[in-house]
Structures are given as C-alpha cells and as structure tokens.
Image (cartoon, rainbow, N blue to C red; front, side, top):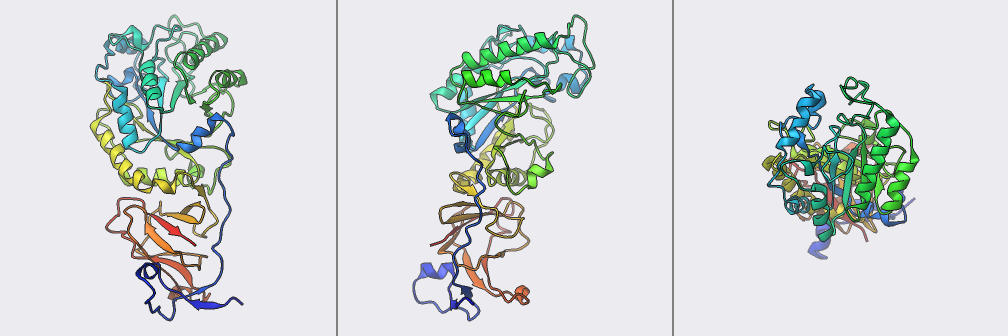
Length: 446
C-alpha cells in the first residue's frame, strides 16, 4: 500500500514554506499519469507546415457576393444560367486589398489562408485561359488569385486553393440533377466528362504553375465520385509542399469535417489521420449574405477548441462583400476570437493530445513535456473541477485565459466517500465571470 503524506495547495507553494494544510489534504506519492500520446503521424516532408500552422482563414468569394444571398445562389434560388452569368458584368471589387484580409487573419491568430479560386458556379478568380467566365473579363479586370499569391509570398503566409469539381456553367460538365447540380443540361451544353476532365486538369496546372508556391489544394463537390489518382499526382509533382484534401479524386492527405454535420468527428477521442475541420462565422452562408445570422463567439470557441485540442486543424470562413471587404460583423467576430486564441494558443501549438490523462470525456487534454492543458470546451456546471484519476499536486495551476493563479488541492471529497480516494481538484474557476469563453487550465508538474 502506498504511503500517504500531507500536501499543500499550489497557491501555497508560491506563497512560501509557512503553510498549515487541512488534515484531509492528502495524496498518494505516485508519479503523474502520462497517458497515451495520440498525435497524428506527420508526413515527414514539406507538407508538415500543416501541423505547425493549425488555424487558418477560409474565404468564399465570387460573383455570388453581388446579390449577397448565398454562394450557391444560382442553384438554390433557381436562377437561370443566362441571367446568373450577367453578374460578371457587375464584378468590380474596387476595395479589395489582400493585405487587409491578411492583417485580419493574423489578428485572429490564423496562420494560413484558403480561397475559392472556382466555386460551383464556375466563375474563376484568376486569369485562366480555359474559360472567359473569369475575373479578368469583367469591369475589375484583375487577377485576384495573383494578387493574393503576391501578398502571401511577401509575408510568408501559406496559400491554399479551393476548387469545385461541380460546375454549373461549363458546357461539358454533365449536370444531371444530382446533389449540387443543375437539373440537367441547358441549351448549348455538350455533356462530356472526359472533355470536362481535360478542362479541369488544365486549370489545375495553371493554378499550380502560375502563382509560385502554393501550400494546399482544397477540392470540393466530386458529385460523380470519380476516381483518378493522376490529378493529385500532378499537383504533388508541381507543388510538393501542398497538402490535398479528401474531397477530390482520391483520399488525399486529410479529412474535412464540415460545420457540425459529422457528429462522430465532433466527439471522437482522437483522429486516425490528419484532419482539418471547416466552419463559417455565418450560420446560413459561406459567401457574403446581406442579412446573415452569426454564430455566437462561445459556439465558435468551443468548436475551434474541440478540434485543435485533438491534433486537428481548423479553417474558419468569412465571405467578403462584392466590393472586396470582409463585413464588419464578421471581422469583429474574428478579432474577438483572436483575443481568446492568442491568450491560450500555447495549449494548441507544439502540443499533442493526451486523451487518457483523465477519465472524463467532457474535458480535453493536450500536453507538452510536463505541462498539461485542461480544455473545458463543453463548459462545467460549477466553479470546481475534479480531475480523476489524478492524485498528484501540480507545482502550479494557471488559468491560461488571463494568467491568474488557481487553487489546486488533492483531498477527499464527500462524493468520493465510497472509494475513499482523494483526487486533484481545481477550485475557484471564474465560470460566471467568464461564461462566454472556453477556459483552459495549465498544470505544471515537476
């Protein structure tokens, strides 16, 4: 049987040697449980930037920002193609300044950016030679991907490219009324999957050769579920440091749980492959919406925390206006999230998950050496937290959000009278004072 000894609170360690503990402040003299590291295996090459920059900005932008309803305006609002394509005649985002977006990105704590080069409507944000339905053939007349690439390269910010496989305005894409497709071919269309794939590969080559280094390719909407490993092989040969998601023509490098649709991804203790969750600040649309409803800061903080604390990346989206400005409310949300993220970032960066450190599945844990971070992403019912099966007192317990010292004790609680086991408790958590945030506790063990 292990020897018991008197202990003192973490606050008392800082106060000095004169401390008289409560008679019930007892612990077992046992080492801190180390748990099992569940960090995802790295690629071992230039793609490992993905694990160093875990939090990124997503941008959905195109001519759909002109009506300002949804990025799938043409399909969801049943807009005839002949009417929708006329939006290109109004495309003139004269206030677009990529550095302003990147300033906001960095203020939010984000470290990379993914932008929609082509969404489902087929409008292209670069000077592509494959279709005239692009930003250069508009009143604006500028290559937006080129502008963004230049800005990112100057600031050493990884740039990732989003590309939709579904295309509502290309004559060769076989729209058949499947999900995220037009009901069928329109007048003048010549559905031909092979020819469409030639078009797609030519565009991918343009994006991978015309804009310097890119760090990721984000496929979307492979409606036919077509398999062709040669496409990603081409991307890897042209851009070896680019990570590729799993929505293209093979499994790619990483998974992409979206919003809160995938409940398994939301609750699993650990991922078995690299993962990047994606979410938007707006509740209805990824593109700009004039009367958008927004998620609460708390909802987004909880979502960000529960993915980053499990060794996943997180991509948070904003939809710029037709003028090229990120809406004021979206920007304010990102800045507030940045204040929280920057205060707790050490719990995410250069740390790995430790899901077996404590028994509660309502709390997430990350670790670095002898430091453990307790993530209260689901909130707690009161101002005290019991951390079973820990019975070792940390040298220091700190609330990472604001740096305040917390009281830590190891003693027997009335609710544990049957087991007669003392556990580590953290007391005095500001659950009312800081009810709108995710609290993260830093425990330092000797």
